[in-house]
Image (spheres, protein in one colour):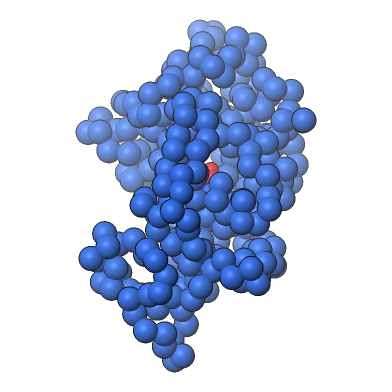
Length: 288
Ligand code: GLU
């Protein structure tokens, strides 16, 4: 099967170091496998979106030598596909409307278990829609983090796939689009390892293939916080790409040409010596 990888940023700020690491690693894996590298803009959460950041992220990537093989897929233009997936789940009775508030679920650790709901149905209010989750383990082998197992009922409960505001949740959109784009391996940060079992369950409900997964160590700042939480403090500068690109390669334990004059040359040097199995296996590490 032809390898297809992807980088799928959310437009919540400028490209930051943690995203650059995911972009570089997913690009190297795709190029190493002789496959395609795709871009998807995950712009389906308008309240969280920072105006101008989708453009700024996409404009920055080529400065780092990262050019996609196909036109960018914008999730904001894929609502009909998410509607169709949602209807498929609804027809199969795999989703249910839910009026429970966070407070209603506080006694269950915020998780929704065992439909029926705590809150009563309310015809005057729009519900969220949750996917029923089974009391069984989802298992997968992560290429870096090793064998994973998660009982969805215990860890995630019946999770929201369509929000009260009417927006589709990341989990649904991601699964529908990974399948639509023919993605064969997902390379992304370890903060999403925990989402993977939910995504695999959704793929099974929708009859979609499950790609391979590789979760990269999460980049932490000097005080041990996840970088994306403080991303405004760590934007990368597309006007001076080499320092950040060198740092990203070092973070991934990849060889870095001392004398390279441009981003393309740095990437080519790393690619020629690249072996995905040598990527760091830890779940997080300092980027400082
Ligand atoms: N859009 C997500 C983010 O920026 C990544 C989603 C994914 O790679 O599956 O954190």
